[in-house]
Amino acid sequence: MHPLFPSTAHSTGLIAAAIVTLATATVAHAAAPQGDLELHGTRLRADCRADAWPASRAAIEQAAGGRDAPQLGSLLRSYLCDEGAAAEGLIRRHAPARILQRSEGTGEIPTRRRVAAAEALAPRGGQVYGLQVRRESATRIQLHWQADEACVHGVSLMHRATAWTFVEAGSACD
Image (cartoon, rainbow, N blue to C red; front, side, top):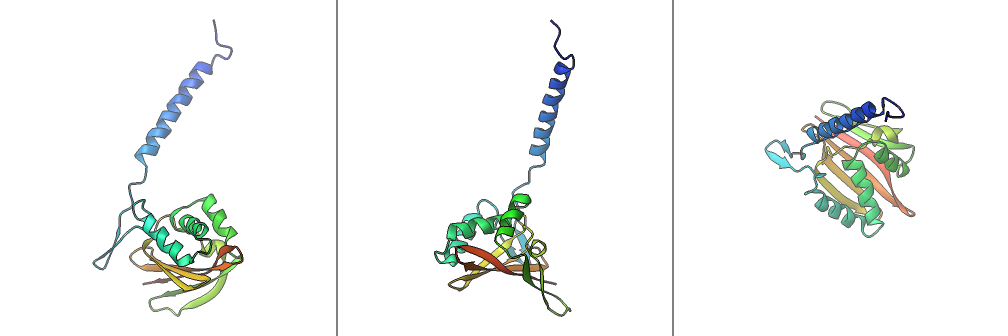
């Protein structure tokens, strides 16, 4: 008996081959576990690695002081460790349209300006080393981390009503 559509068998074979190729490429290009950052003789851990994130999450939740700590942990996990549209959407829901951004560089005058939150709060994609979390007040926390050998980044968040909101972002680079 002839197939209803003669190319069905051929198409099925092509689809199967494409799936195998994609699966092989995905495995071959899967990201290796992120290494630590060597900074002037000090090794800073990659805080988004599976073995390091629980300690980072615990520090974040402790700084939250009981104010929606799991929500804050999830928000910051998306911001610090993820990338893509889902992370961007979550960050946008927890930020004003424009946010205060501070920046300074070696030999430059420090700047302070309001910028689009989407520009200042792009997901970090795991480029977070030596994360430090500090509780500034009952409703405000601050995070700092090394992004690479030259730049330190930071954000501040405030707990407003029922949610944590980004209120400031910044960087200092050599």
